[in-house]
Image (cartoon, rainbow, N blue to C red; front, side, top):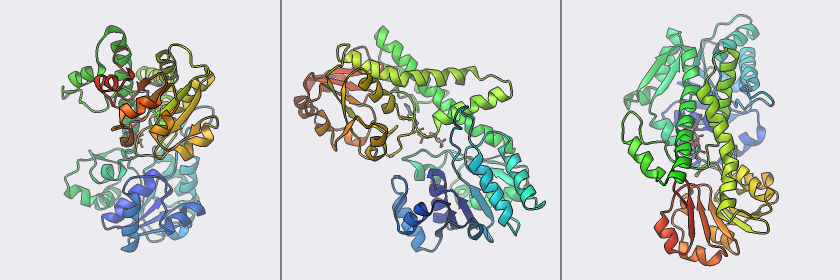
Length: 435
Ligand code: UGA
């Protein structure tokens, strides 16, 4: 199969590279000359474990190439994937579809053969109809089947998620398009990955429903954690106790500072907009969004309380800035609200993160960035673990404690046990365990 992938963000670059690795001929298209130049010289525009070597081997094998020209990219291909960004539109939270529609228009302008167009970007219900209409209008009446094929990959685990998916969802009412998609994903059928053929609108909504449900699961356990702290229970045991019930499942029940990232915050809000436009309220998702928003700043207050109620003139060491480990992504990271709450309350903040400091620095001009947990702890009054990077999982707690004045450790990801933290000489605070 010959495939064009429009957009070299997370989804586009990972999907395009993995399709090439399956043996397809893939050309990735991006308008951003800088990004394409970087890719052509082997530099990745994003940090994703394993991606650089997978790109290099597929480029060397002649299966993967890059261009800024959409016309050149789509020439003679069997399928064109649209994997451009759908950020939150400023002001109203709707998904901004201008990049998707611009891609559709350009496809319509340049398409001279029959092929299938596939939206991989997360797009609200009905977007496929509009993409199909735009292509027909611009191309002067050409009918091109448009398929919805949402992506469920996680940043930091994207290649594994793509190659060993829990399921593949393909939404189309067109028989030929279904056959093309079957060929595209053939290597995964051989691995017996469950594949779900649905109507196009169903596939579009499935993506939002999946992310909203996962966000709900996290938010649910976070509220149970708050209750645990007050009534004297341990949220990790509660999570395990409920998670062993197969109907609930043990994943996504880690209590923490609230979800962030490029997907859950934007997709939950976009789902609410769709609900509003259709006059079908989604009250559970509404509650999830508001509880999670409040939680991030509340974590700042939790740190202040752990430090005796005032942080004026005190120094706080933040370990981890990105919204989760193994990414350099700072979008909607809980650290942003936590750091702001501490600065507002008069603290000095020193932070470290294995991959996120470059992206974080302009967002936090008043924070000093250093390159290790120990450097951050030097002369601090408290240490706060915000992101559970591996680099913070096996710290020498005794050494860390010896560097800190007030010896307060706030573990917002519950990666250390209370007994080991206390043995090192720290006062331990965590999520979902009474202080
Ligand atoms: C998420 C979904 O997991 C993917 O399936 C989906 O494809 C993707 O969004 C997307 O729509 O593109 P991602 O945002 O990369 O992936 O990250 P997750 O690993 O899902 O984590 C999201 C947030 O939830 C993080 O802030 C994480 O710390 C938090 N989280 C996750 C918890 O606080 N507790 C948990 O138990 C799990």
